[in-house]
Length: 431
Image (cartoon, rainbow, N blue to C red; front, side, top):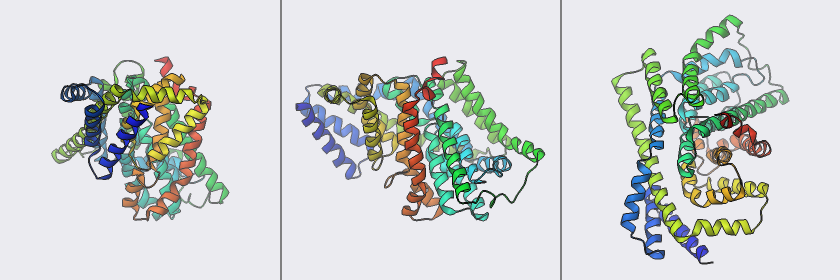
C-alpha cells in the first residue's frame, strides 16, 4: 500500500529530527511540511497558518494555562508540609504506616495540580526526609512516591486530559469527571499493596511509634480542609454544571491565590514566579499542540490514518486484543517520549481505529491516562524517575526497581478498567 510507504517516510523524518535534538513542536511542523510538499499539491503556507491559528485559539485550551497556574501557585506554598501534618495522624496506624502519606498526599495534590512531576516534587520534598528519619525502607519510599505521583495525570484537573479532549474533540468536563473514580481506585490499589507488603514482612507495627487520639486527628483535619474545600469547589462546579472547565479553572486560580495569601506565602516574587512558570509550561504545550494539529492535517491529506484504520480492522482483532496491543504500544513509546508528546503524535492514527472499534472515547481517555502514567515510571525516559533521582540521589536502576511493583499495579488497573468500564463512564453519564 502506498500509504504504508508514506508512513515509513513520515516516521523516518520524525525520528531523524527527534534524534538530532530538534524541539518536539518544530519536529512535528517540519515533518508535516515535508510530507505536504512531497505527497500533496496543497499550499503548505496557507494550511500551516490556518491550522496553527485554529489550534492555538481554541476556547477549550483556555482551561489549560489556568489549571497550570493554580498548581504553580500552590507549589510555592507550605502545602506539602500541611499535607504531611494533616494526613500523619490518620495514616500512622495503618499497616505500612506513613508510607500511605505518599499515596494519599499525591492523590490530594493531583486534584489541584494536573502535573505528575509537580505532584512528585511537592509531596516528596516533605515526605522523603520525614520517612527517612523514621527509617522506612528506601525502596518503599521511592516506589510509592513514583507510583502515586503519576496520579497527577489521571485525577482532575489533568493537563494531559485537556490535551486529549482537544485532540479528539470530547468534553473536558466529562473527561475530568470520568477520571475521579479510576484515580481513587488506583490510589486504593497502591495502598492495598503497601498494607500487603507490611503484613507480609511483619512490619505492620514497626513504624507506628507515635499514637494520636481522636482530638489530635480532628485538629489535623484543619491542615487539609482549605485544600479539600478548593478541590470540592472546582470539581463540584464542573459536575453540577454551574461552571465549565474553563470557568472552574478561574475559580481554582482565585482560590489558590486566597490560600496562598492566608498562609502568608503570596508575595510579589512568588506571584511573578508562579505566573512565569505557568507561562513557560503552557507555551511549551501549546506549541506542541499546534505542531501536532498541522501534522494531523498533513497525514489526513495523505490518507494515512484512514488506511491504517482499515488495515487494523482487516486484522479482525478482538476488543481485548486491540486494547492489549495499544497498551504495549504506548508503554514502548513511553520509553522514548513524554506522555503529552506520545498522545499528540498518535491521536491522528489511533482515534479512527478506536472509534471504528466502537470504544467510548471518554473511557478510552481514562485508559490512555493510565497507560501514559505507566510510561512516567518506565526507563529510560520515565520523567518521574528523573525527578526522584534528583530528590533522592539514588541511581536510576535502584529507582526503576523500586517502581516496578507500581508498574505491575497500573497494568492490573488497565485490566480492571477494561473488565468494568463503568468505573470510568458512570459519573459522566449523569452529567
